[in-house]
Length: 137
Length: 276
Image (cartoon, rainbow over all chains, first blue to last red):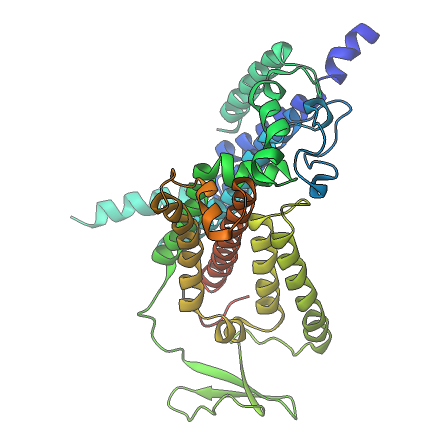
């Protein structure tokens, strides 16, 4: 039993991010409402952020802020094993804000589409577009 | 369609789960991601930049280009929303609603009627009539100064504690959005106008790029804050710390303004008169 569980328990962070990512992907593919697609996109982004943050973790290490750092630079030796990996945190810090920005642009596009076609349902928009094309000549 | 999506999604999920077999276990100190360059950053960043918070040091110094273009992406998102939605050719609404503040009576003035000036007695309200809520207004008025001070603290103390320009900017923007939600969009726009927020968006990016260019003019590489040592009369490492501070302030201004801009435009669907 232990042999069966240990590979799952030692990698559960990947399972969580895969689950979230699949939920987001499913929403983006299967849902026909544009707002639901945007929400799916956000869930997918969150899954990627979780994945990156989780690979930064280290057993027995603390947050990446040097202890007693303000008492003078290089007064003490810094061991890399004492601090978790700061790099994924940096990458995700910017990714979070950029995801807000992409969410803003996506919502702006959705408002624009709603103004043009009066609906956010993908199928209705498609029929309106083909109807417009048939009408125009 | 749903079945098709389910097949694709579960296929993807299976492949990803199959791939985790080769991944290092969670929190493994010997994982490939935690070895090569990460150790260098942890051991050297304080010596080279005088910033105890390694994340801030990497964000604004080692990966300065990345953050600069990230700020530009946010600025671009604000500009994109503006061009997608801003609507200047909107005809005047059919009627306006005014509230007589002392009595609480609401007036509906049709087109062609005389609109009263906004004063202490008459207040224009949104066409979707909202009741006056003194509890929310008072609570928010008490909260906003503390939120803004906390935001400034997060920006200014980003060297020594978790924080920095992005987080502080978002909190600062949230305080303004909270104000706009608690009163109405018009009173927020009279305080921080459309032009002001647009100018602040570009000011932040300009501060960032300007700092980089200043380093270039002083004879170093672009965004190599060590060149500012002569200006600050300090050591090279301390100059990097100051350079990171300036850049973080720029990022904070830009992020705050973009958040406010996005809220104004999206909540009012581009009309900038009434929103949530």
